[in-house]
Image 1 (cartoon, rainbow, N blue to C red):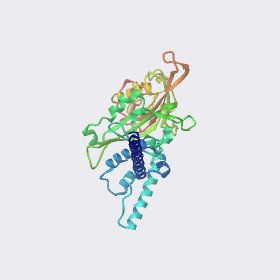
Image 2: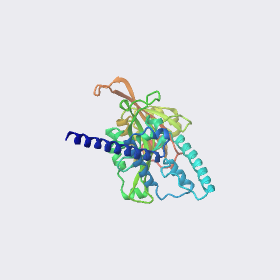
Image 3: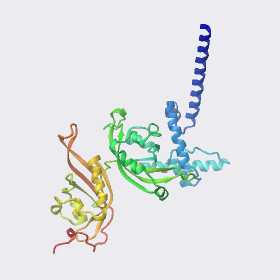
Image 4: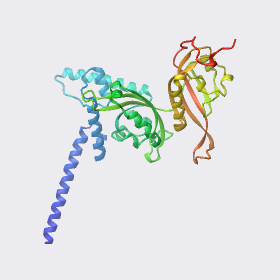
Length: 369
């Protein structure tokens, strides 16, 4: 009786070993199919293989139906070459395709360098289907560590509702390529020296996300968001007289502004001190500025988007403002560990000349003679 029991156990152990061996071989074969470097493939665990495989399958579905023009080849390459390389009928055609791929790769790398940020493709559920490989430069986490995970695992809980609202797409928005523009906080494993640290000690990085809704060519049931993510604050270089800086109290009243603002808008420094920036904003853009102000109060950094500032004497100028809350050295009494906000620093870029100079929309624009 004991001998039979031991025999059954031995058979069961051998079957389990055989099953694990077959499973490992399947995962090894699957990892080799992924468009990754062999050194990366060798260090993938089983959950990572499943996660990356599902991401590449979803990306393949999104790109399905794209055909071989140079522009589409560039787009395919940008998205990680997830469609793989297809066989060609002749050596000449294969050589031409390789040349196009090299050119597209160089073009893609150029775009990413200019961008000062990274590219991300999100499903409507928040899954990170694809990220450009330069994401590690900004987050300290590699493309392979993030792909397939859900964006909500890495973003600030207070931003989840706003992210869900932006992921929520109607059929009309998908087909029209609806625009998205929002600010979110995401975990960053980068230290102040630019080195990667443990995710448990990660800090929050503020990202300005802009993009459009996209729909799969072959299957209209598959939609996603294609976003560019730029970390804030951006590098504010005062390149010309068309850029000016200002400081504000937390209710957006001017406490300082440089002389460039006088040259651009005609208001003197003295008459602006103590005035609210809302007094100089076009009425139709108040909602946009209010959203920017709320982002500042909650997330400490924000980008306004394009809005109109009124010019002394009449008309308006299109501008965009990049803002950050400057903390005081004194700790906050209401929030232990936090610092009391000192002021809001704004860098404003003039995007146009004076438009409709004969139009006066505010009593502040009337010049006293």
